[in-house]
Image (cartoon, rainbow, N blue to C red; front, side, top):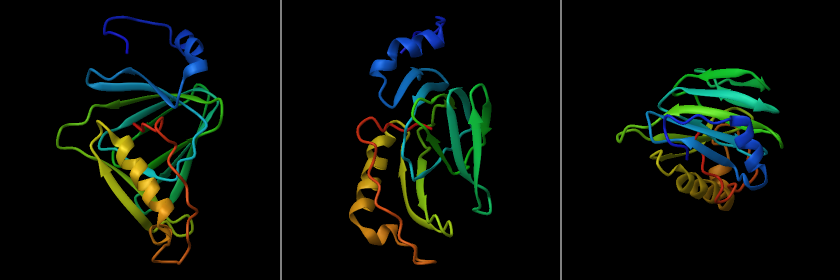
Length: 180
């Protein structure tokens, strides 16, 4: 992490760390904001519901930001290099990145009484299949456990509304520390 009141060159920092990146690298999280850069590829099937707004700035490549409208209709905002997107709080979203893409994400620190939600929906009818909550300080464990539970139990992936069964997808492993 970088100390406050210190500037740095974001492009140089990314270039210097490309060989040992992992899934996500935090720039700041010891302020009112959490700022990180995340890269692709990823294979998310969940939708994250954040209690605060999020800002996405596409640094390289393309981001397909899948989200659900208030009437549960799936939409996709495609962000190309240099484009920004403000995602309002409580909008279920699933950022999906191709290999070689880098996204800067800015969001606020959660209050002690706030939890993030992670939901999985049927791809055919968008009926909710499964949900878990996690306090933002460590959402990775809760989400990884939910992915594992769904992979092992087909009934959690079978839609009660239309009967469609979603494929088993495993978590992206220890690097899957999802914050946005």
